[in-house]
Length: 357
Ligand code: ACO
Image (cartoon, rainbow, N blue to C red; front, side, top):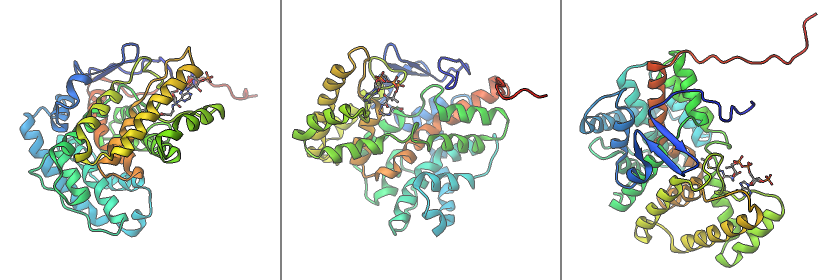
């Protein structure tokens, strides 16, 4: 009852999380077919086919123009906002955007996190924000706004793969929050802000940072087995392993592992970091099999997210914001679906307090 486990709260034609088979299906396509082959823009066009039924090329150019429009908001990134965490500063900038159910507002919301996250990172480090280039692809432009350097095709492909991989995932906590707010007809911006609030919590969007903390604490491959055994003996959970729904494999972990392999050393993947991660993964899976023989515990999406975003130059406290850059596609598509097909979400509660006299 308390977590609504197994409770069906919406019908959706957007994505299916099939935990028993280890499959994620987005609008009839498996993630295995989409990741690494589809740009973020193409995925957005798939997810927003009902909300913004535009040819993929037109959606791409409108997304580029919307990045430029979002950049005007960077003027409001004052010292008070810069003292906030990256996720909170992102939420504050998103809250300044106009609200409503118009297509232009949805496209602006889809574009904005890719602009705001690099700008916040740079301004917090005392550097100037870099303006977007509407002619570039979304992933390419985000990487350029982060570093000021032209990213390689492998780096662009890696970020595209990441954004596609996290774009939608059934009725997770942030998507449910978006649907609840959208059902009140408050507007897409309000729905996305509710989703961002849910994503900020460490139980939802916050695991990849701790994966890097774990790798830093282990330090080198020859310490991995002893460190992991000691952590399990203390009753701790190994970050980046296990999942509530996936029981065989997390297909998103596979997609990101392949993206990392393609990125390689030339794309910024540090060979020593990768060797450490491979040993940690192998030893952790072996130890978890021994510790929990009845419970399949596999590598989850967060393990490879951490390595991929680190290799692309994002600081670990920006990982939740980069996640939002991809997941905003799902939040918008679900909000539209809720507005179109659903009703006001208003469940009942069971009163268990004291009886009135
Ligand atoms: N390390 C060690 N033991 C684990 C792990 C882990 N990563 N995951 C589960 N277990 C153990 C639990 O301690 C529990 O043991 P017990 O029955 O003796 O108490 C058993 O396996 C079952 O665990 P549950 O709590 O039922 O697993 P649940 O499905 O609720 O939790 C979760 C899933 C939260 C992801 C869990 O596996 C975990 O804490 N993993 C580490 C944190 C992490 O990687 N989070 C990101 C997940 S991906 C995502 O949310 C997008």
